[in-house]
View 1 (cartoon, each protein chain N blue to C red):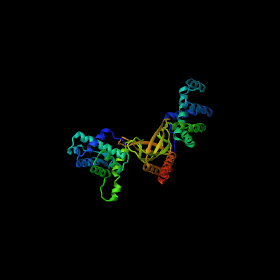
View 2: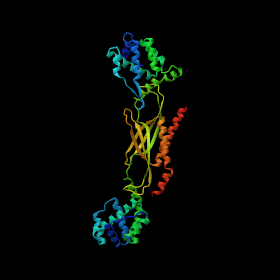
View 3: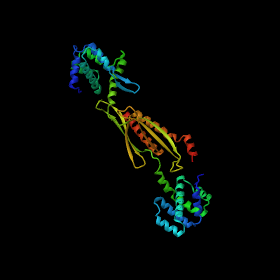
Length: 201
Length: 215
């Protein structure tokens, strides 16, 4: 059961949100989503605060709270029910919670996309090209007949940096490599792995 | 077959029985051929000639060094061109070696350990092959894959994103670079689909090698 945990200051701000109706909360959600991309203009903030008859600091706190809910929700991949409950538990009104939940769900996918760009990226395999050669002679030895496989690996490290590695093998090592990697592939279908995948949710 | 004039001169010197007696010749040749030791631990050829053994010869030191060097060059060239016994004998004859010396050289070139003809036929290539193996390790090449290690992980969560639940493979290729004794590693990660693609392509490669062997 995933839940959003609010600290005391945030709980106070939630209670304060209750004094507005749902259309205004909807506006808040829209502004908060925008603020995730670009910081809010302080003049607009002051104007809005004046119109609502509240100090600008308080408006900023409320907008920040809603932005936090959106980001945390995306991070935890929270679902609607869990999100709704988390907010109602700390005292938010039902209708207002609905508005905020709708906004979070709309933006979840986009935000998760952004966050996946911040993941730890190891060098990842992209493509393999191979070539079969027969070595006929070198400077030191003439009259050879040795088969050789050249492997060209394309790697990608997730930050638009591509790496190309050219390696070679002989017949024996190629077979060893293929067999080992095939074994690795079959491991995923094993009972052990299936049980782990099923039980870690 | 190209041998520089200095070596040719040294060989002619060694061919002359007055400079190098047949017994000394035999001893020297034995020393040289035995120096091609196969280091079983590394699986490689490690030539080692103990210079103190050369002190026992009654040939002046400078000439002795030149003769030994020229023999090594000669053996390398024979191995490079894959000469058989007949060609070796012909060449030595042309350089002026006596029949006795030619026979001694050919014997070591062939390495007759046993007097049975069957073993003779099997072993006659041995020392030559060993030398060819040694020479072929000096060629330029790409890093050579010798081993692979893999690991299957399951990503549960990260600090920026929870509930990921994705399996990922970490593959490590052990690679031998020419001129380096230590093996280096090439590490990368891949998803299940990427590994499937990789294995498919490697299988294609090994199948085409098999087909080549059948032609």
